[in-house]
Amino acid sequence: DTAVSQTPKYLVTQMGNDKSIKCEQNLGHDTMYWYKQDSKKFLKIMFSYNNKELIINETVPNRFSPKSPDKAHLNLHINSLELGDSAVYFCASSQGSYSNQPQHFGDGTRLSIL
Amino acid sequence: DQQVKQNSPSLSVQEGRISILNCDYTNSMFDYFLWYKKYPAEGPTFLISISSIKDKNEDGRFTVFLNKSAKHLSLHIVPSQPGDSAVYFCAARAGGYQKVTFGTGTKLQVIP
Image (tube, rainbow over all chains, first blue to last red):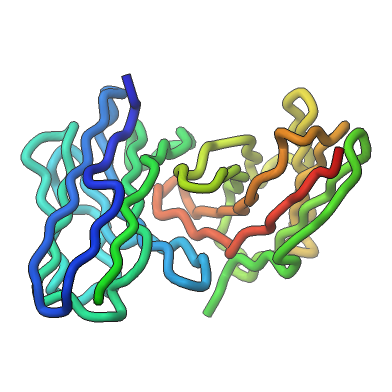
């Protein structure tokens, strides 16, 4: 009955590979997000989708491609992985892209590039 | 350019005492502020928030104070408990838009 769930929890892979991280929320929210927490613990937004529509797209390399098949899912695909992609990636969701409702986070996916 | 700053990376407090976590921001467009708490290997969880039209919001042991002129907010935890030991993130957003800017966090340790 986890509210926001991400898979996998850990991902270890080699440079140059392509990988995907999946996120699902069962809160009935209409907005989902991807954040990256780097080695300095800085949590920064990457993308946001509202009802399957991209509404936030920060300065992220185009190797990162989010996909939202429905409003309960937001997946992140990363092509040609680089060492600098090593980080913890958090998925989050909220009700409304313009609201004071707080965001609910998943437990993160720790991505390590060898 | 870091618009939300938490200048104390860590803080240790005795159980039962007050914990005060500080946060400064630079963007005057921010009008809603949040505190999140994060345990290891878990995602951040929402703790308390405050709108810029207020200067104080209280929820049980947690109180957030906002000083708009100083662009400063603080989170007070009274009394502190060992279960409060976690990383606390200050966050802010502007105009109701859900693009949230986070600080780098303060690790609180409450010593029994």
